[in-house]
Image (cartoon, rainbow, N blue to C red; front, side):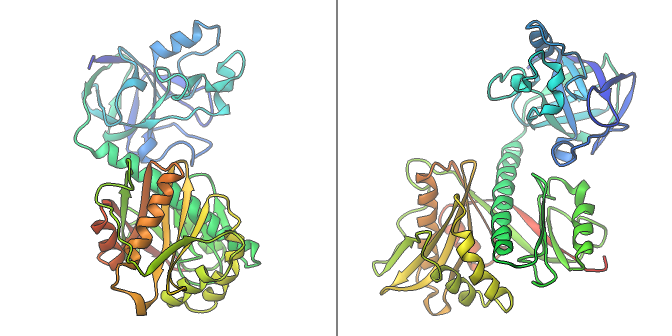
Length: 419
């Protein structure tokens, strides 16, 4: 890797262009004095710093575009290497103090359109111009930077960056699946207030107590925005649950730990996932007009109380119409004894709501249901399959037995109505 230097440090009070400053302090959450208008699209500890190389700026400018350092919103303009061609996980030691780690590409948005003569901001897309994309970075060590500082590059360490990429995709799939479920309940006529802002999602319902309809997702990667979840719960006068990597506020009450799993299918359903179905078990995907068996099994097997049980049954009709949502039942002698679902999102298959009647547990039916849904996801084009299960529970054990790799955990933290 070729080292480089820092050309310019750029900040703004929101929006573009960001303007050059002579010195700046970099903290875990970004450059001091810099703001973003769209905080769920930009910012947060995993997207604290945006970087673009002067080489890319010059290439784009040579095509007649009015692009300059800072006009596309990058915090740091670098020289000496194409930052978008660095592997995720590469570390940048800047000056004597700061260490950054490349986390992901920065998706271009219409905010930067005026840097282009034709307003086509996709000119900085990683998909179409991989050498000219901006990149996000995490702050591994805080400190002060100045134009002219030397930048020393270090290759990725271990598989931490890859694990973060997978965790990010799992979060996206889980959030989309949850929002589809909450919206189905709303369409069934239940009062549920859903906040869905692209990368965070919060549901609140005073009529339906408990974590199923009062939870917050996406804050593991945007812990700086957890106040939005707390405010949403408070506005609806409900107790809610926030999923996060660590306590999202001081002394946050901890409820449980969810283990997260991923599987990358190859030619078959995946290494270690074999034929788990017993001869007397039949697993089938329900057509969109077959309503009843799926919800009834989950409500019964999971002992879901009222009024949540009735809500679950009534939302199924609406959930069945969601294009990327698929429902399955496992049958023994023609009788449904287990149920689960699969949600597809950007080539990720998210497994959820897998339940087996107590009378049929211990017979490998849940493993068969996991295998069947994973294979269905692969056939639908998924290149990653994810699931979440209570740490130490039977579902977690079954996922591990079938070859799913544990990629982390999420804590569930309770936000009381008066928090």
